[in-house]
Amino acid sequence: MRQSGVKGFVDIVLIVGIDGKTTAIEVIDSSYMAFVDPAVDALKKWKFRPAGKDGMTMALKVRQKIMFNQK
Image 1 (cartoon, helix red, strand yellow):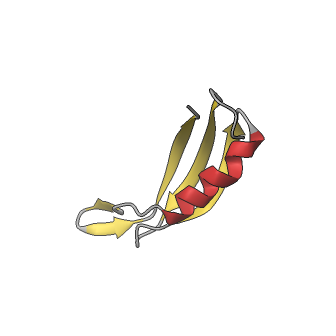
Image 2: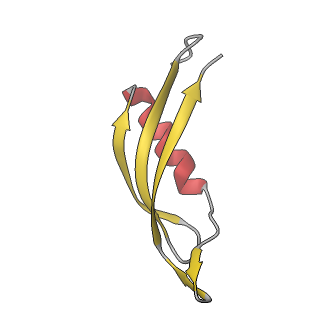
């Protein structure tokens, strides 16, 4: 994976909970399987501002594409 010029993506669907943490991470597609674990590990650490409507926070299903570009 340390090859120069390696590019790719991981397409993921996840739930952002009312606490802003990611849950239910599901990989939809990936250009290269070696990118899947690093993408999922990164998303587990991400914190989002929870969705809200009418002053109430709520969980939200999100689709996220993570791009990789090894230089």
